[in-house]
Image (cartoon, rainbow, N blue to C red; front, side):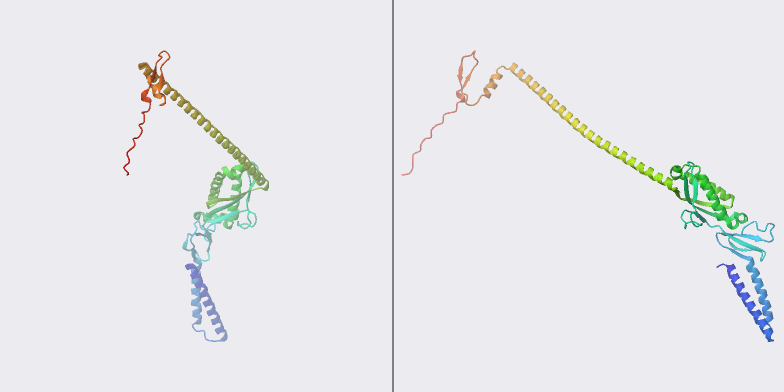
Amino acid sequence: MNISTVVSGLVVLVWIVVIGAIIVFATRAWRGQRTVGLGTLVVVGLLVAILLTSVSAGMVFVEPQTVGVVISAFEARGIRDEALQPGLRWIIPFAETVQIYSTANQTYTMSIASQEGQTEGDDSIAARTADGQEIYVDASIIYHINPDQAVFVHVTWQDRVQQDLVRAQARGIIRDAVSQYGVEEVVSSKRFEMIQRVRETMDQKFQENGLTLADFVLRNITFSPEYAASVEQKQIAEQQAQQAVFVVQSRKQEAEQARQVAQGRADAAVIEAQGQAQARILQAEAEAKALQLINGAIANNPDLLTYQYITKLAPEIQTMLLPSNAPFVFPLPELQPAPTEAPVAQPSTNP
C-alpha cells in the first residue's frame, strides 16, 4: 500500500464525515432544532475534504517497473514530453491525468495449440519456404516498453501495442525470414541462422516503435500433412538403406576376419616349413662337419677304424678274422671269462 492510496482512503472517509454532518445539520434545521457550531463544523469539514481531494488528485505513486504518461490540459499537444518515473510524483489536480504503462517483460505467444497463446484457437504462423513447402511456426516474443519511449508508444499505439504492433510485426518478419530458406534448411542446417535473422529484424522494428526485444523463441515447426507423410517415408527409406549398409559392412568384416585367420594359418605353415628346412640344413651341415672330422681323424690314424670295429664287437666273440690277405686267426683269451673255482667242503664240527 502506497501513500497515495492512504490519502485517497482518507479523502473518502472525510467526505463521508462531511456528508453525514451536512445531513445532520439539514435535519436539525428542518426540525427547528439548534444548529449552533454545527454549521461551522460542516464548513470546516467541507474545506478539509476539498483540500484533501485536491492533494489526492495531484498525488501519483508510480510503481516499480512502470512509468506514467501525463495527459495535460496545459500542454500544447495535450501530453507531457517526459513520462513520470517510479516513485511519488505530483501533477496538476483535475487538469492532468496519468496513464500507467508497464516496463516489465511481457510475453506474446502464437501457437497452434488453442490454449497456449493470447488468441483463442490456432494462432500459429503459416509460412511458405523457398522451395514452396508450407510450414506452421509457433513462436513467443518477449519484449518490454522502453521507459524513455513511453510517451511515443502512448501517442502512436496506446493500448494496441500487443495486437497491432507485436503480433503484426512478428508474423510478417517470420514469414519473410522463412521464405529465404528451403524446408530442409529451416528445420536443420539453417535453423539458427534463420532465428538470428528474425531476432535482428524484429529488434530493429521494435526499437523504431518504442519497444525493446528481450528474446525471440522459436517454439515449434509443424509441416503440412502431405509433407509430413513424405518425410516419414524418406526417413523409413534412409533407415532401411542404413540397415543394408550395416549388413554389408558386417559381411565385409566377417570376410576380412576369415581372410586374416587363413592368412595367419598360411603364415604359420610357411614359418613351420621354413623352420623345418632350416633345421634340416643345420643337421646336414652338422653331419657334414662330423664326417669331415672323422675323415681327418682316419687319415691321421689308419688303425682307428680297426679299433672302433673291435670295440663294437659283441662280448661273445672269441675269434677275430683279419682281412683275407692276412690268413691269421687270433684267439682272444682275454675276452673269455675266467674259470670259476669249485667251493671247498669244510669239515663238520658236529660229533
